[in-house]
Structures are given as structure tokens and as C-alpha cells.
Length: 422
Image 1 (tube, rainbow, N blue to C red):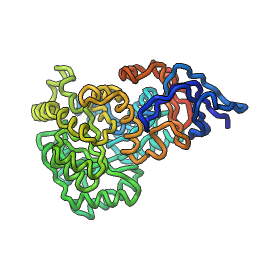
Image 2: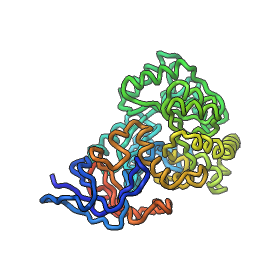
Image 3: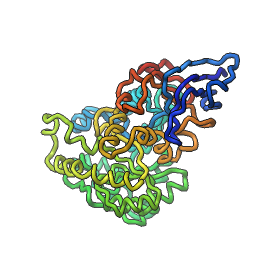
Image 4: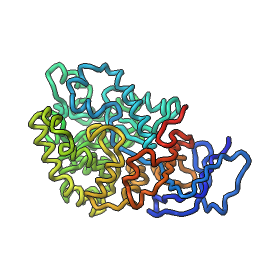
């Protein structure tokens, strides 16, 4: 198999947070097999060489909180989404959205909840086998929701249909739910320890229904199968219970207290702030805002007002910050770079730190740092080649035209913002 050689480039070392000049990396199959000074590189017959003078190489970027099968217009018009789509349509939406991610330099995504069981496990297989070009996909599929689910909304017949999201209460119910997700092909478990924002008046962000023994059983059973648990949690009661019982990533964490921050530090828990979602109410057009129920507007305003200050405390105290957008709640897909901008603006993170968050920190959060997150020998050959530096201006990532090449598992999947042909 011919090797792919990326020579004479600047390389972002995500482990050390520095850029190393005039280096070369060699890709063979799906792995990085050599990295070093360009002057030390020895060419072999058949090598395909990319001379990348004045280019910057990043490890493949990550967005570890998205919902591939939805769109922003769907979220803002739930009636049309429910009435005009069969379940199978979401698979096509997910495929289209995944292809947009690879063009923007995102080589790994974690889908935190889908509309149908088995949709994303099948899409994962199609993407990993390169039947279609797209990012590496970790799928939770249908979340484990609390019985009496605060996330449920709609008329009785719709609530009855949504029962598939819920599970029987108690420890045995949690164990069965985890095994059920594993049977259907889930890579990790997504749960909700509080209500949400874009849901009805019964969905309260400050209340949690799970008991500690239920959450502890969920985590224990998931980890037995090598899976981790991610918890949607806005209010501090749900954040604290999730962290206390060993859940690995807190999604949103918008009303987090200093007590919970200290507990996260003790437990090694990761925060996925999804600031672009938390502040969505301030950015959507007035015409669209007028279609939302008043209780949703009130909850969204409460979240937006407190989120930045509370999450900044978590960052300043040293809680590891991973990158997730909650797209399409936060806007149409592939605005991961906008999330990175918000973390710089609102949290005081440096460009170097947010690049680390989007690479090695996110890899650690999903337990994939042994194979992903840095451009080191032995790791998967996920490489993003930029024609501009992002160290001074992170907004360069907003334009796919600034991304010359995207490799995933050693395969060139996108060139100059356009998808390559399989």
C-alpha cells in the first residue's frame, strides 16, 4: 500500500499546546507511522507526497454533542417535523449532515440522541466502512429517560409513542435499559438528569427524577460493556447527581454550582458547555422567537443569563472542557468553530486551549485518546490541513475554503471544502 506523506508542514502538538515547524508525518493505511523533522524524512518508492510548506496540520477535530438526524428548522417547527416525516427520513438527514461535518474538518462526532433505534448504528457502519465519506460516529441512539419523563411533550397519543424513550423505574430498569441500548448497537449511553429547555411546561430544568441507586446502576452496567454515560443536565440538582454517581460527561451544565464544580474536579468529570445552544434565544430571528411557547422563552432566557458566569467558574477552576454544539438546537449543523469562538469570548480560553478542547480533551472525554486527538505515531490518521493559521484568529475555521485537505483514517475525504468521491 503506498504511503501518504505530508511534508514540510507546521504541526499543532495538541498534547503540549505548541506548534512545531518544518515537520513531516507519514500515513500508511489508517495509521500515522512516522513523524519527525522534514530533514530526517526518507522517501520510499511509491510515496504520495503532499508538500505543505506554510500549511498548518491539526489533528482531526471533534464535536461530541450533536443530533445528526435533525435540522434547525425542524427544531423551530416541531409540528411540521412530526407530521411530515416518517422515521426512515431521519436516516437520510443524518447522512447528509454527517457529510457536511467532514468538509468542515470534523473527523469524529458523538451523536447524543436520535429519533429512531438502529438508525445511527447502521449509519456508523456505513461511514466507518467508507461506503460514504463522513466522520467517525459514536452513537447513543435513543436516550435513557426517566419514567414520568420531563423531556416528553405533546398530546396523550404522542406521549404514549414517546414511552420508548423511558424505562422502568429502579435499578433493574436501568440495567435492562443499558443492555437494550447495547443490543441495538449504541456506543455509549445518553441520559437526562433534568428537564430541557425546548420542551413543554412540565419539563423543569431544576428538578431531577432519577434516584442515586438508579444512576449508579446505569453507570456500572455501561462501564461493564466499555461504554461511558453522558448526562443532559441544566439545573445543579441534576448535574450534582450525575457527577456524584460517576457519569463521565455533563452536557450543558448551564446552572452549575461551585460545589458541583469541585465534585467534577474530584471525579475527573468533563463539561461539554454547548454555549451556542445555551444562548440560542438571543440569536434567533424575532419572527421565529414569536412561535415559541412562553415557558420555553422564559427557560431559555434564564439559561442564557446565568450560563456564561457559572461555566466560567468551572473553566477557571480547571474542569476539562470538551467541544459540543448541540446542533441543530444551536443552529444548523457544522458550526463547531462558532462554539470554539464562544469559549474564547465567554470563558477566556486561548485559541490554543480551544484547539486542545476540540482534539485531545474531547478524545479523553469519550475515552478515545489512545487512538485519537493528537498527531502521534500509532494513532488513527485523522489530519486537517489548513492554508491559514488559527493560532491568531480562530475564525479561520468558519470558512471551509481555508481547509485544504481532510483525512480520516488515512483516506482523503475532503479537498478545499468539497467532498471527495468514494
